[in-house]
Image (tube, rainbow, N blue to C red; front, side, top):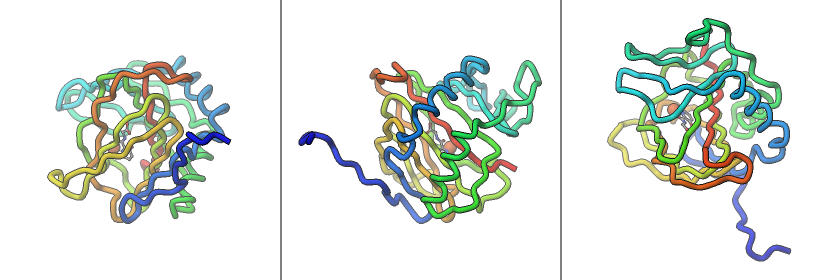
Length: 211
Ligand code: MD6
Ligand code: FE
């Protein structure tokens, strides 16, 4: 028996409609990480422009709808910037994991049509924002964290609401919807670290029903 292993709970409620599922993705990691790696080799994550300036994270997408930004704004797009090709489909291991996590969180009918991949090098961060470009707010967002740890900032309905700090680790999933679907959130500047599987990076996948 390992006396020093830290027990983490399986389910942590964050707010009405939102929960944290520590380690939920670990049982399928052997199939999941190669699928993400293969996607990123073929569709490298790129720094996107937004009206607020260049983002510090790099971004790629899978599914019917990818997330694309430029200096005019940002939107879901069926086509990749540059090549105008459609995005590749969401691999079944990822879509099935997202549906299982949503089900655990109380959303039994989740079928994602968009998977946004954000790659964080140490020093990258994501400012407080709302996710409000999707059409159906009855569907949740499923967010999967891979690689080095990061502090997720989970606020409230107003930008000025003080966020709680959630220490996300490799394999953790956050599901949110319902009453907290449009809550402000972000990621604190990622601290330098090395993960045995991913090296010095954090990768976040957010799965949505965009349309
Ligand atoms: C991230 N996530 O964790 C950024 N948005 O890297 C998000 O912006 C996000 O995790 C909506 C729902 C879940 C999320
Ligand atoms: Fe977001």
